[in-house]
Amino acid sequence: MLSSRIVKPLLQISYILLVLGTFCATLLSCVALLSQAVRTSPNRSWNKNFNALVIGASYIALLIASIVYCLKRTLAVRLRLSRFSRRKHKIITRGDVPDSVHKYITAEYARTCLIAHQSQPTDAFHEGWGKPGSQYEGVRFRRALLDTIPKIDSLAHLVIPTHPSLKPHARMIHHFRFILPLLPSNEDELTPLHYYDSIIQLATISHREPTEEEFELGMDSADAIIQALNECRLEMLEGSSTQLNPGSEET
Image 1 (cartoon, helix red, strand yellow):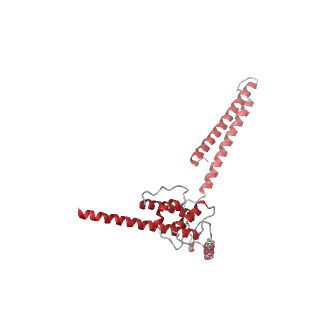
Image 2: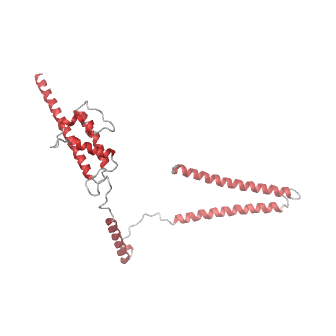
Image 3: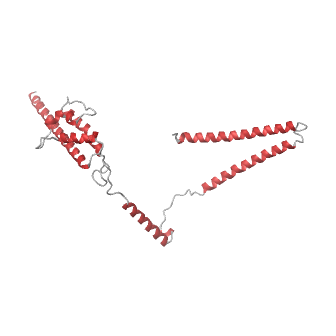
């Protein structure tokens, strides 16, 4: 669609062309009728040519009527626009209206506010989103889970510089297989990466949206992985600093 900056000039130009076209057509018809009146008159001149007089008077009357109509429309529009107040709106106080009217307006305003407050959704639930009023309000579970992948991948490259690059459709358990020994495991020998892989698979290929419980499990697993990688990175930094200290003392 064309923008208003283009449409407005086009409308103005088309209106001007329409007016000019109408004026030219009317003028040409007047000239044609007058020339015909002259050719059909007995003396073939303007003198004592009643038909030419009638035609000229008709077009003069048409011109006057058109001017009067345009002026009338212009004045009517200006009068309507002048009725709109240019002053700033003033807040109505108790002294501006009778007490009964003021009480009625106050009661209606309070009733409207109460209805608007009671009409706000409190138990609304949209699949894949946090509930209103909860800690996850406005959070889309699928997007939040997928956003944790680049964070974990960047930390994995800091701990293991030769870590493979992330592929679009790679399983998390396969992509992060080199950090499996760094992660804690439970009694079932399952690490946070196993749970994280399952939740990410659900968020990636499943048609249904993740539930709040699945979202919490995925985020807890991601936090556990990030914490383990941060601890490994700190140990690496401490080890490198202790290796540098003896060398500095010998020098």
